[in-house]
Image 1 (tube, rainbow, N blue to C red):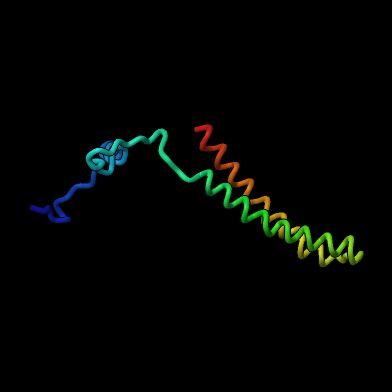
Image 2: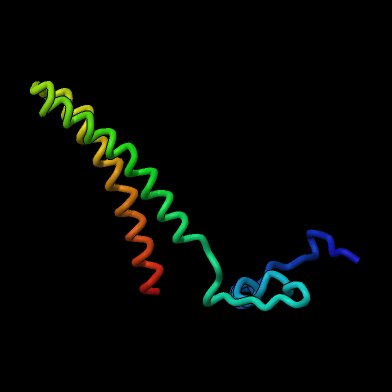
Length: 107
């Protein structure tokens, strides 16, 4: 029935690689798998991430506009607190997203 743990031998590297390269299971009846052109939500994720990044960026730009042009008083703390972290937080996810897209497209 079931082999005891002491009687089981670990698979060698070739058997393990063949097991990992194979399918996890058979697909249900009537379903055809397509691993080369599978459906995904990349476009929706990129659009929603861009939208969610642009809202805070616009808020920071509006704040800086009011400080510089309307109040005409800017201090070092305004730039240190508002500009640098905001633009780093905006640009880093965008750069990482495009890096991932480039890596996927090139493979």
